[in-house]
Amino acid sequence: MPVARGRAVPIPGGRASGPVRTRPDLLLISVGLLTLTSIWRVHALFPILGSLQVPSLSAVGAYVLFFTTASARKRFRELSHPIGRWALFLLFMAGVSAFGGILTTRTVFFITGDFSKTLLMMGLIVVSVRSMRDLEWLFGAQVLGAALYAGTILTRYSVDSTGRLGDLIYYDSNDLAMLLVMALPVAAYFLRGGVVASRRLIALFAFVLIVVGMVKTGSRGGFLGFITVLLFLLFRFTALSRKARMGSVVALLAGFLLVANDQYWTMMSTLLNPKADYNFSGQSEGGRMEIWKRGFGYMAMYPLTGVGAANFGAAEATLSSRARERALRGQGTQSLAPHNSFVMAAAELGVPGFVAFIAILVVGIQSTIRIVKSRRRGPVTAEVAAAQSLLGAMLGFVVTGFFLSQTYSSFLYTLLGMIIALTTLVPRPADRRRGAGRAPAPRPFAPAAPESQVAGAT
Image 1: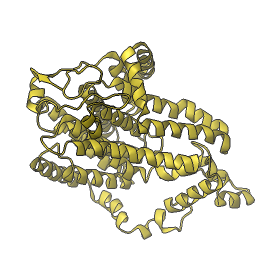
Image 2 (image 1 turned 30 degrees about the vertical axis):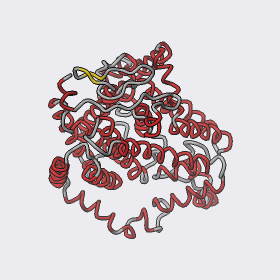
Image 3 (image 1 turned 180 degrees about the vertical axis):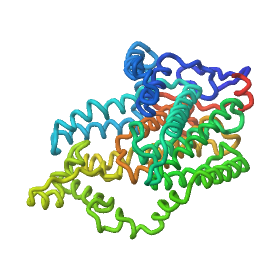
Image 4 (image 1 turned 180 degrees about the horizontal axis):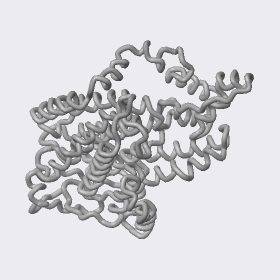
């Protein structure tokens, strides 16, 4: 794309790539507010926003603006990306599971009231992004949401006798740890050189709040995810110079050690001796290892449909061997969560849904890696930096999601929507060699303006 006076000149017939200085339009603003309310629950943090009906207004506004914006409707076809197709197949399998599972009503309510809205938000993200500037705006919304949530719980709540934050707003400590771990690489995007100094300072402050909040959750899965993301930022996040990466990691570790107390390290030490942990010793029917075994057993009972989306707890209370044994004694059985996103997909959606969930993650990660590899030489562009951030966030989900029931996580599908949007800005290398893209046709790739030039155009 030709660059003149710090602005990228659009090429007719494609979406803007590089440092196009577009202003956020009403659709993008609505989508940003929608992610802040659906993921970061800002209306719960600040009740005045709930009183003003910000969640409903942002959702309705986004839907209305999509249908009334011709350019957004044209971009809808970009959901034909493999991620979009696998996500629609996952929704289809959730619908099938409603009729082949154990509690049809529960599944129908979950699909119509929750999962379908999550996928709609993913689609809205794709159609609202016109350029890298738009994608950066959505990145900023995620960083703002993470900082607001982490800052709020750090000021309103304290660590309880178990050594972790408890009774939080909407999320429990484990779920919050996952969200904060996934937000770390997104915040790192704004720490690279050439970004306006004020944005870098805000991102750095958010980065600190996110790390402190993650430590205070006391989540062991969050700790493993944090280590994974930290190693990724150190060795693979080339958007920062090697010295900057080393310095940042050292500073993060120093701050981590200052915040983490003896009780925290005692909890984390159990990771080194899993046999002493009831979750993995096999000696407790409520341990995660036993739950995971039962989860794959449910998939074996219902291989094509699963027990039904949102029905894992119901399966625990009715289908499990412990439920049958307690029923003979006239006792009820507690519903337990799967505590594993992969087990959850297998048990609730059967083999086809399990394959679709794995495929979504694999294609999402591959898409970011492709963009990173497409620009191995020369300076790291904004597109590559964004791809690296999204890759780090996806890796954070894979690790933390292995210990949490987050198959239908809103943040996961938000990231996937941003990955699809980014791939439309950076066509495949084969498409660049041919000089034309596939339908929907991405524009020929052109290098972004130097970061200093981008900053100067603000």
